[in-house]
Amino acid sequence: MIDNRLKKCAELVRGEGVVCDVGTDHAYLAAELITSGKCSRVIASDVREGPLESARKTVEKYGISDKVELVLSDGLQNIDTDGVSDIVIAGMGGETIAKIIGESDRDFENVRLILQPMTKAELLRKKLYEYQFEIVGEYAVEDGDKLYVVMVAEESGDWRTLTEAESLYGFFDEDDPLGEKYRKRESQRLEKVSESLESAGNAEAAQHYAALAYKMDKGTEIVRISDVYSYLDSIYPFSTQDSWDNSGLLIENYDMECSKVVLSLDITNRVVTEASEKGAELVISHHPVIFDPLKKITRNSPVFGLVESGIAAICMHTNLDICDGGTNGVILDRLLEKYGISGEPEPFEELGDGRHYGWIINLSEPVKTTEFAEELKKLFGCEYVRMSKRRMKISRIAFCSGSGGSMLELAIAKNCDGYITGDVKHDVWIDANNSHIALFDCGHFHTENIVLTELRRVLEKKFPQLDIEIADHSTDPVQYI
Image (cartoon, rainbow, N blue to C red; front, side, top):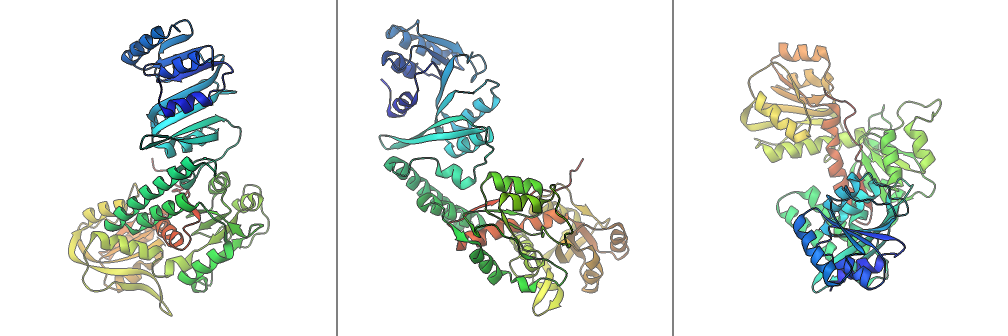
């Protein structure tokens, strides 16, 4: 009467009370549960009358009308869950199942959720943990050439957030051959995505999906933090940082090992909480979490949170800005993807020993300042771009990430007619207008946060076994009204 995926759902029902079958479609599961004696009462619901009519025929056919209550309901909205011990939601997309659970105001205490998503299982896993459920069992089910997953979830008091890799990997028993087969298929799928992105010229995303494919096949592994530090030092030498800077391994953890890493522009309290909820042992940031000497560490300090949570911190500030491929190198690459240039990029502020802040490029074709500003919004992903009051065409453009307003005079001295940076002060705008140079303030945050995807690419290429996340809370600290 029922296929293998519904058989697995029926098998996982505890049979300790009423079962609710959401999106019943023919009531086959309800009939199986009643006729097998697994439970004595089922509530079978659907959002449409058509499937409910089909369910009614099934119930009448098996003579169980007195034991199956048919309810027209959008998700759990019209269902009385008093006495319900198990809720089965099967045969829908993972996004729909997550929405049904997330929008419900029902009490799920002592209720077992048995969920069988047809698509986006990774999204459902992630959402369950956001809703404070725990996946206590997961099973792969084979039916013909198809593989389905069935999850068992229960309410949990713990705050935990799944990483992207964890949400893809699932919670199968390690000795489950079908679970292993499922992960192999997912690994192959992700590898194909990586190859497509590589062909499209998106190296950052291609490397990320290749690393996800690796972890789906082999799982995550522990790496010494000293190895991570040494590798970063080989690409962005910490010795190149400015004398006033404080980049390096600023906070150690107890074991000096990691399997999960969170990347962020800044280490804020919210980032520390996120890293802790994801089980990360290391945070890597651009801005140093310790800059000026600390005379005390208060409870509202991110330093306190890192130490309390046992999370290490590596901070890469000016060494990441200065080195090729770092913060300004990412901006250069993004501009070159959009615009053709004549000649080679030139160093902007030269520091000696081959070190420099920013670049100067000469566009092959001049561009209007207003059009250029619109492209910068897309490039940096910022809501606003502040621009000097110069409506003209520009072609020789300097840029420096972060707070580079003080370098406007250098841009003028180097015959630039456009300059991109962030954190521009009032007097600098006056000077820009007086000097007939187009100045673009794209924000300190936005001109630097874009380096995180490149940093993830670099790390995942060397350490595909590490679970590396860009922090959800690596966000602009400013709200725009």
